[in-house]
Image 1 (cartoon, chains in turn blue, green):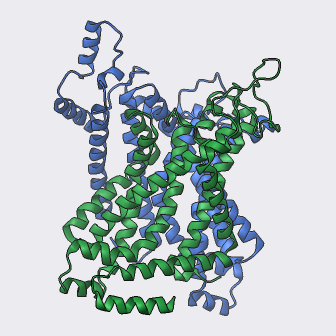
Image 2 (image 1 turned 135 degrees about the vertical axis):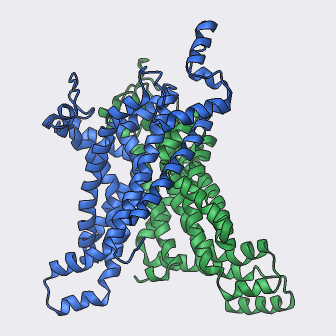
Image 3 (image 1 turned 180 degrees about the vertical axis):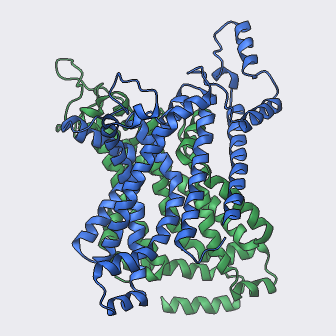
Length: 322
Length: 313
């Protein structure tokens, strides 16, 4: 198991290098003068030259690449043109907000999805089941940003239950992690974006859980459990649900990639100061080091989450040996 | 149909060149099963009807839309019809600069369908070709191709598309390219696993022994057997592409010259009126949901054709 995790970690490191190279090339080979978007072309020629040299943009592509890779290994993503401070610091500020929102939504979605899916399989053919399926399908087909807009319209503007945007009430400046995240004001701001993201995540675990439960419920050992006279609830959650979980975990792993995409949109709609919103703003402002850095961190996040899902899978299914 | 079958069989006996026959039979029964399914599966029927409706609106959008997407509308006393709620003249109301939302939504249908089908076509084509090659040759070729697939799985979709849209010029073709560049991986993986099992079958071995070339085996003998699966994946890819286009346009990286549902919502959100003008926010989103749900229902019915285990009800 340990060697497996080690091997996967090595592959992830290799992948990060590949993804970084790709993103480097993408930004450097774009049509037109790539330096124009990095250094303002309207400033005096000498000042511009000085800036180009400061950012190392006058070197050949290969030299730039080797410098870029060396810096990457030292976790140095350069400094943001817009914030004029190291990219890594900006990312460090933004990452917790993204992770908290994502995990809250995922826990919400998986808890409801797994129990809901199991229950739907149990009540197969009932009215409630078709309501559940339709509900899940609608939220899977609805664009997250639109659901976000509707949620804001209903809960923030009409009902005034929760704030519509940001992470804290305007004017508040927190510095430490505790000050920013551990209080009621933050939780109030978390509700709507987490709800939106959760509704989007919900359909996948719920529908897959239902399908795999249907398959499991027709197995002999479920009949055996019934024959033993076990209470329904125990058969459902102890015997069937446990074995039906596996495909849900696998699908969850593959789902993470698109989940991060949905996350970007939700952060934009709710002005949530996370990494997703930052990458959109960085690209709009042509702040390429920041866009690069955020992109590399987001891909790393996808890969690490995939690894975690695989490890969980191995724990759930004792037949899997690495 | 049976008589036609035997007559064709006789002819093939005379002319051994007509080997495409097997594939044709496959797809024929495929569609007849699909049609038979429609009779029992009401949701699929609803999906097909909705989809036909959307395609109709998309094809004739220019003549159906009562106004141009950028026309400004004025009241009798030369005032701009700013943020008017739905009325007979403007069924979905007007925007903050007096544009007709109903026409914009109708014109957006074409963009959504075009991106959806073109991207899906490109993705399924590339994905199936790579999947077939990978599954058929196996060994080194398979390993290398699947590592490339793994690489593309590690890239977060929306952030990549944002970066690509920023680097390239914002146009509808670049959106299609960006979507296709990252989505073929799914199709390739699914097709490959199917091909792996098909290429072990005796008739493929027989074809090899008979001296058929690689290309002939892959595209004449294997391809017809994965066509139903590929069609199913294509339906899912249409959904995926439509959603992706809407997301990119919503973020403001879409084609500025083309009216699309995502773009309507982008302007709605950026202008800040998404909190007031519900008639501006609801229609484009609802259109996306309805189109995607209808394609999903059709795909689900296709799934039942592909996988006989699902054909219970």
